[in-house]
Image 1 (cartoon, rainbow, N blue to C red):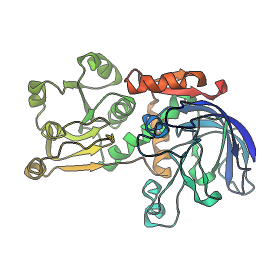
Image 2 (image 1 turned 90 degrees about the horizontal axis):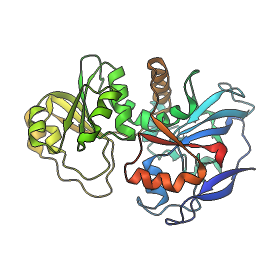
Image 3 (image 1 turned 30 degrees about the vertical axis):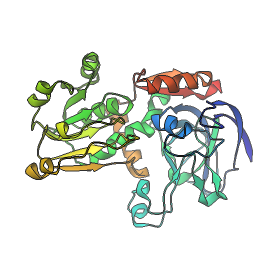
Length: 349
């Protein structure tokens, strides 16, 4: 075992404090990574504070990891020491079910192994620990290549926020000339705007805050609709082919469904902690609409996303934070006070 410095929570109310954790020695197919940056995801907050159920403490969060390869196992062929790489939301899966064999490891029928807080079935049943640390060891099959020239800090959130928005846009086959709506302009929303624009779509942002109009347009949106204004929502009726909903708070979907044209689809990404108002079936039936959800992407699709973002000059808009600032950054995330993603500089651990 190798000991590395990290920041961990020991209870739902402890906050994040300095810690030392053990990483396994690299096996034949393992890649050891010296972590440079790790994005802060809102799901980190939910998990650490046990808002999605009891967490397994002590716990190191973080699943938007960028670093450089420090060692590789004897049988590793695709990675070399010194190469910049990434690790996203999962570090393993069963590799045998239909979903895994088809490249949809995120939907592993046994359950994928999350980068933190999960039982590592292939490595002794230990609990995985994430990227708020100075190093990690991951099986080569779940490590991504970071294209040359990408800002490593601003690339880190692509490993979650980027792929979470890219995957449904690709699933919906969004292309040049399509009209896409994005509900919410936070960490996920701003990535959805950038990626949809790069795919050639005309993008409409829905927000409850008129103050975000300029920001949305600066990010590339073509239109902004204030969703709390009934007349503005009525003006957007039947104007869109697809909607990506990034909002994790409880909200009524029915007004947004009315903005979809025939055969349109609304894909839910945000996961509210309480029940949402029911969807009116008549809205779906009358225009053959679809309402669905989406998780992250598989490993191959995540690599595709990184290559796509490199080609189009897309990274996340970030604010770097130190380890000592993590608790304050969590509070600011809850308050929506970030444009648009915090990233931890692990050199400060």
